[in-house]
Length: 377
Image 1 (cartoon, helix red, strand yellow):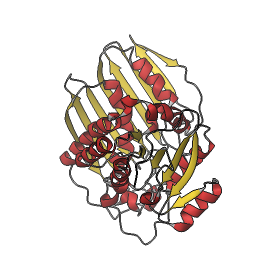
Image 2 (cartoon, rainbow, N blue to C red; image 1 turned 180 degrees about the vertical axis):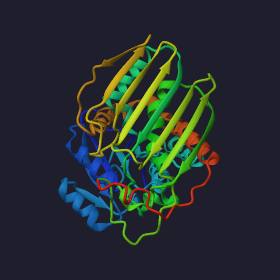
Image 3 (cartoon, rainbow, N blue to C red; image 1 turned 90 degrees about the vertical axis):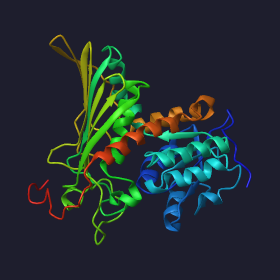
């Protein structure tokens, strides 16, 4: 089969196919792509006939296929891959080797070996790989990054995403290690590292250790009611962590404390990033993601010489970071400098995740209910 073109013509929208119509493909990417003037959704791909037919009808998509190999040559300029985690690298490699540009939902890869496969496929196929991790496109994160640049050398970053209860698709592939690659660390931790690592610059992370626990992963009271593909009844217990804590050291002596948590005894879902620099500190309190159980509004503060001031932040609707990422995709797709960049970032991220897992005591899924009986909300 001949290779597809590497980029869209400058005088027309980017023709895109969405591969994988689970929650992320169906709820995040397909409706946004269909509504965006810079894109034209020309195909959807999913092995389930009913799923792809509903998506095709809902968004007036011309074509639907069961497998990425069925995409005709020349049909698309970009493929958005939103399949389950264990298929991310496999599907992306198949497309890249055909010369098809790929936008790959996070996690970009589950192992360093998969990162190497992606790099080889991108090079051999001559197509670009772009990565989907929208946290850095949030207006509040961009504001924090700007403030952090004014704090002098960064000494330490505390970053946490703690959900009150938000185990995704409990009992499904998300909580099966063989299909997901891990739990909260792979899922939420990828976003957190994607936020923090650019602030630290190109420095090498010399040490990465951590711990994991699973008090909530099999607790029905901890399930994310707003984020589930199918009912969990009758399925096997999950074998991944619901909570991960990590500590990183860089070659320059900066440190990072990371806390990723699907469920807890907290009342709200909250994301907190505190950057400590030689000339002060800055803290952002907000909520990443789509959970309705969130902080009312993001708050950014800066502290210097004993004085803390609140800094202005623009208002934006939930999920605006995904729209903003799409705004920038066509330029990234056309930029030769994008070649290899996503894989390099992914390799750095997955190396840290692998090292945290290697240092952590393996989880043994609990059977008791950590939240049941403690609250009715």
